[in-house]
Length: 445
Image (cartoon, rainbow, N blue to C red; front, side, top):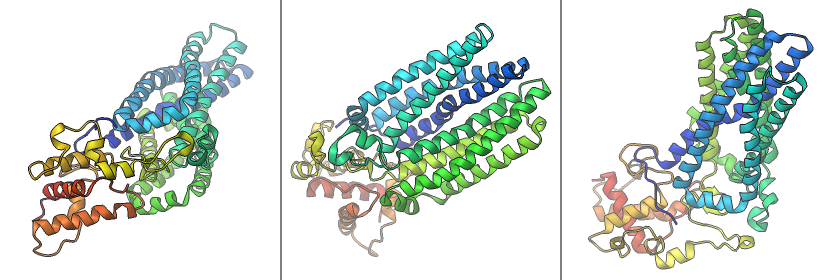
């Protein structure tokens, strides 16, 4: 167990989600832009159209700066925020997929060096060699997606891994292929949106028209194929996760996916019909709409993982909930229920390890931080605020404080029955302390 990162009003998970959602733009651009570049560059050489190389240079520079400067920084941000938000989850993933990540890092080095070589050798080496550099970069970059999707999919549907502990049983799980193909097609929509934005900065009308039309067709094809594969992806989800889409996903997020998809398709159609009317500001707005759709999709994907950070193994609050015999890992509920959470968790002030009348509220807050703060904030206002949640409980009219605390205890007892919340673990005294703390912050009268 590790110290808790408490983020007022937002929660650590939302900070991680914000960074991760932004990171998808540069990371997916890096896996798709070079495919478009190689296509345009090949056409420039075959049709003797050197004017197209101006776009290649500008698009490559965008890729270099956006994907490999801002993208690299946001990637570091993901690692940092994930490590402090859910260190045990990251530890579990590293212990199981360290060689997968090591392989991905090898291809990432190819990407980082490749984009510099590609950009700075344009026009300085022969055409055949430069195209080979582009192909090496494109294939290497897509390979990083091939690897990372296996780990992302594992965090939603671990396949046979809980029984076997085998690397590939978890990697090639039931949602792997559908998610990989979906992301592969949708990434071309991302490449298209950025290519059109770059095209607006080109003065040659013929080049601008050709790039905008070509990119818009890539975008339409990528989004339509991505939608078909998205429907397949939904069918490959475990039944429990599909149920959580209905139970947990806000209508606003579902609407965000549909609206952003519709707007982008209309945008690409318009760009194909009237390419020279597209200016930089509408192109940036299209990227903003793209981000909105990505945010909605990724938030739903995170929501339907609940109550786990790694299904059938570790709950979102980092408590190991299931035995993984093949890995020599045992569930922790029994020992925590016997000894007490405050005695087992190492980062607890000494004055709170033994609960008494004087420290009951403070001990309850410590328990809430450990067991609840990965998804809820303890402030009055914020995302999934605990005080607001407790107020929704139906208390008896004119009930005494002790009676209301007892009802909150009953709610805590029922947590295991909710498909999206981990069960409470701890002693009866800790449960009473948690209920007392929740009562105090909800301001129930």
